[in-house]
Amino acid sequence: MTQTTIGILLVVLAATVEGFGDIFMKKSRLERARQVFWIGSGIAVFIVQIAIYTAALRFLEVGTAFGIASLSVVFVALLSKWLLREEIAPIKWMGIALIVAGTSLIGAYA
Image (tube, rainbow, N blue to C red; front, side, top):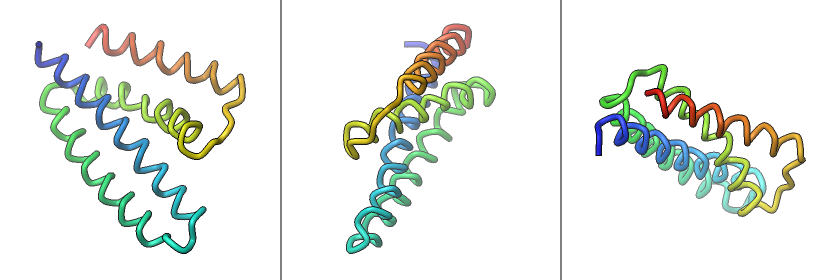
């Protein structure tokens, strides 16, 4: 496995973790009785995300890592559909497809 591949995998992992952090923050607004728990969980997850992303920067240029990190938008949309039962409009599905295509190009030429 090349160092670039390791960097890309770390950024994708960081984007996934960031998605969970965003979901936890949303849960803090939905479940007021457990608000402190969800905020604390969200902050903890964001700290882990920062550590993973920072590790990825060892293997990738910042511009490449930042572009691939846009996958967090995709993960947030998918996680919100799965965990929060939110709807994703067809136009958003098209946007998700474009983000995936764009990040694939960035990763392919990293």
